[in-house]
Image (cartoon, rainbow, N blue to C red):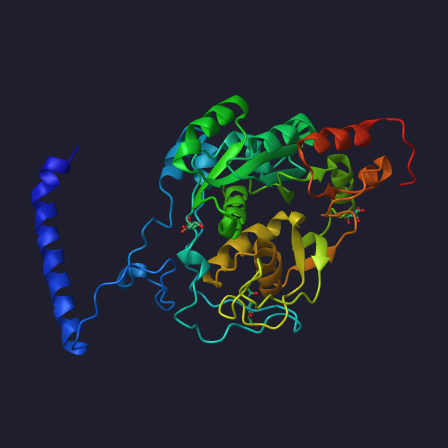
Length: 386
Ligand SMILES: *[C@@H]1O[C@H](CO)[C@@H](O)[C@H](O)[C@H]1NC(C)=O
Ligand SMILES: *[C@@H]1O[C@H](CO)[C@@H](O)[C@H](O)[C@H]1NC(C)=O
Ligand SMILES: *[C@@H]1O[C@H](CO)[C@@H](O)[C@H](O)[C@H]1NC(C)=O
């Protein structure tokens, strides 16, 4: 609308920018006599050294703060609007490190090649569905967020048709969390979402190496739209979750604070060979041993860890192993308890009805298996010693 009027100013600032660019080029030429040919930017440009205000660094290609979210929330009750918060992209105040001595040593002086998480994460959600968490979660016992990929619509259907039914309870809420989809999938996802209204779509591109960003997107959603919920389960779309058992677990630990429960792995070593699918460079994680972490397929957290995790994440080197990063590196840095609970199998198990009924989380479940496990959970016949 104002484009015509702004044309002159735009041209002027264009000219100014060109002059500045030319000056910069001259300066560079003077310093490195034979000017190298311009090279394409590397896939992961080295970020500027940590310097709180972004103004003198390269401008981020996308805003860290999502303004459309504020707009979207206006449709909802003013109560929600007033509580919409945005994660501070940079936390400048010093933080007390409460980590146990066995965990990663405090980060040494930053190498400029280190890619920090704030250089990767794009905040905000496309259709945030605040209505999925009524009263900001005040009456919820449990919020279940299922990370999913845009193409996994059949896996989501299997969850909706089986254990996802527990979201019909007024004390349980559930949503799928996706990264930003490729253009070719948008229409299908919009149709799916208009049918079910349960897709929360973040702004970082959905890809395997962005899993950590998806989990951050999930935490941001919980913090923004469901901050009063008591417990959050993070799980994936290839999981079977025994929700009644999980609710009993939640009740039995009702007084816990700052805790993450799941299948806790101790003394795990980072893979230093570049051939490994789980390769981690010393720049991403300098320590010799990972801090104790809860494995990614399913972990439960008290909601008081959500905000601290979101505040600490931007300043840590980006690690694409989301479980190690969120529950291990950040969990340790923030002094959170990571408690092993055997009911979180987080692996494929022989699907005996009693194993299903005793467990909380079973991994690597295909479409048809969801229905098999659902029946075994609720057959009403098998007698298992609890
Ligand atoms: C950090 O440590 C100082 C001194 O030990 C203490 O006064 C302060 O309350 C601590 N802050 C937090 C957020 O724990
Ligand atoms: C996500 O992953 C893709 C491809 O792996 C990458 O190009 C992109 O920069 C990543 N980050 C974000 C914030 O989308
Ligand atoms: C939690 O604390 C309350 C109040 O102290 C107590 O009555 C309750 O039994 C505790 N719950 C559990 C599971 O320990």
